[in-house]
Image 1 (cartoon, rainbow, N blue to C red):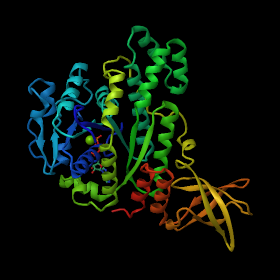
Image 2 (image 1 turned 90 degrees about the vertical axis):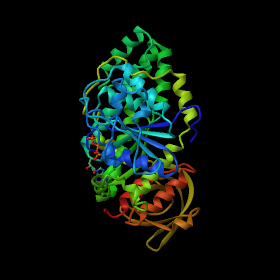
Image 3 (image 1 turned 120 degrees about the vertical axis):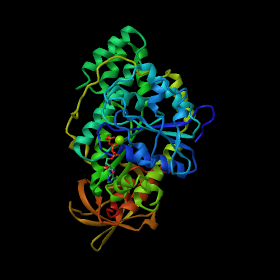
Image 4 (image 1 turned 45 degrees about the vertical axis):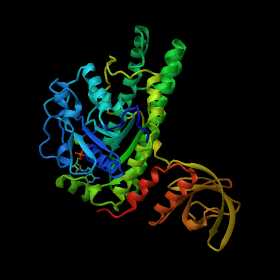
Length: 448
Ligand SMILES: Nc1ncnc2c1ncn2[C@@H]1O[C@H](COP(=O)(O)OP(=O)(O)OP(=O)(O)O)[C@@H](O)[C@H]1O
Ligand SMILES: [Mg+2]
């Protein structure tokens, strides 16, 4: 991570729904970053139900972020307290503000300015629940945005609604003139049904310059999605489905990083007031947190800041109602059909009963592969697949689920397969870290 002159990396944690683990993830993410040698400051921006100090074992929080907002503190630095975790500091939140109270625009910008001036390498901001303006603005103004969602439908609906509210508020903030504001206002009233991919050409027809700015904003407005409280291996499918839906309808790139299973470790650590990652480094959940911390810390901050500067400071004061939209634009199931696939050009050796075949893999995913070979086969047939370029991964047991001429879709089988498919996908992606794999690895581990 590069920090000079740009200030600390700011990571915002949000997700719409209450109780999905945003604070627990914030505390552990901050601890994971600190464990990697960085000075990290967790900021409790959950105005209304601040509890990060409890999760981080800080007994007497003293001055809070509210002190700065009320003008009692000259600088946010005055509210920073050490936590029992080495290199991890906290700006405690306050419950003095009702969660729904909207902060004046100037106060929000002041807070962001002070966060950027903190003498630290990275900041993790727990934005709290809901889709109020405060939450959205803190989320939108960060360098990296982490969504936390559970695989339950209500959480996914809230998550979609949250990204939608963030994207539309961000787009409205791009409007510089009264006519642009008017254009976007008319646009947002149709946003219930209109895809952003349909909206942009319409805006372009009337104001090409604004369309460019919106495209630039959306292009840089990526979010990272972390699943939490997963109960089984199949539960990553809804996360990928919602990611595709967001991409499709909102033109926002969602990177599904993986997931943390439901585990007494997390729950117990909240009661013990110490991030679980501090004492359970070998646990799969801790490994996911460490990988996530690493990924975020590798952010090219100069590039992010340059992009922000290009489009000007994203403002939070743009008017426009937030759609309190709890519904999805269509059935999630239509997006749930498959894992993310990665194109490959690999030779495969296949075994069906006693017959052996040579073939090609066209793409692979965490769940299966698309293969091409010549030979009789029926859907439901069991097959063994070895990837010739990757013999060290061994043979994959699979089932044929789809036929399209000589191109056949197969699904990997077996309880031991998650780690190997994760590696397979990682190789398919080249050097890029694999997202869904961390989820599979985590959820394949026995609960507890
Ligand atoms: N992976 C997990 N396994 C088991 N319990 C978990 C897990 N993640 C979070 N929890 C528990 O869920 C509860 C809610 O977590 P947390 O307070 O972090 O949620 P939140 O999203 O911050 O809630 P709020 O919106 O109210 O701020 C806590 O009791 C926490 O211990
Ligand atoms: Mg919370």
